[in-house]
Length: 113
Length: 261
Image 1 (cartoon, rainbow over the protein chains, first blue to last red):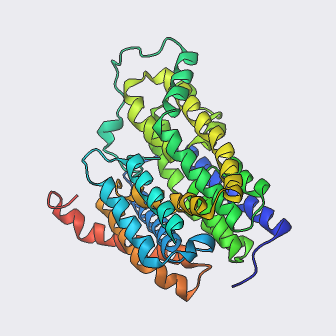
Image 2: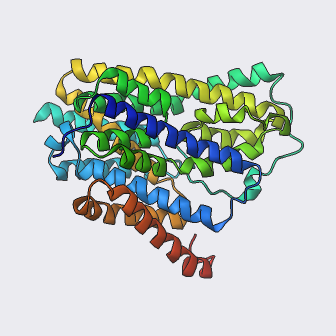
Image 3: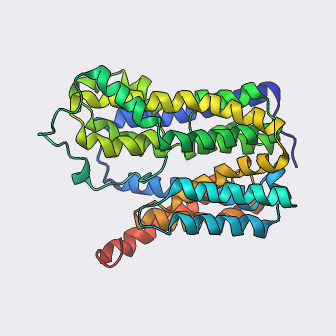
């Protein structure tokens, strides 16, 4: 593994990330005056965004860094599947129970191992 | 950060209703209603996510100031996670800034769907300040509630809502950071797991098929691009999977509307 960013490098990265995040919000304000939310570029941008966040999530679950990496991968996947099961078990989606299910199952695994 | 985090909604749903009964007496009333609405389940979920992020910062050797500062300055959980993960694996500053910016592009669509609903008088330069409060939670609730709030009180309501969400996220992060250092590893494990789980669960609420396909392709392609080159994997996965989903939607799905989506 490469060495982690440290000291000033870390804070410069935060500054860059903060600027980028705010930049997107500000562009939104700028465009809000005269935007067509049906336009093709926005459909494309949204798809790219979702794919990116999905890639991030699958990486956090399958290839985590640190403590979560000590849990066998099939247990991580099993808990995810069970939580999603709770989430979609009712038409009125239940985020909080599903979140609790997953978190408590992971906690239970940590206690038992 | 729960329902309807998809940027596309039926335009008729956000059309301003002219004859809404006055729901709030004045701006102050609307502001506090926003605070009250934030204080329920939505803020608790956001708080839990931030606690999980704080724990993540601690277990990966970041300091408390840095971990807390990301919540204060960025206030965008997926972006914060990207920043942390890339910093840990030693990505370059430029790559980090680019990747975080791209994960934040959803704010563009979120802003352009929300702010046009504010009263003409409130759509001024002050929005450049209040837009920092815009995150998935406040956006989803505002999209729902704005329809029952008269236009002149919407900006106050949004300010109350967003402000509380933002303000609780910093103590949430710091609490998570110190909890991870003090409680048994089993509890820390549960805390660290909250974030990936939270994002995973919100995916079940994404509506348009183009975005669902993008998520599915992202799941499949993400690990391959990660093995290929970890630094750029989020960018490449996003561009390849997102463009593929977009083209598939454009060439195939939209031709047979009514069958799907």
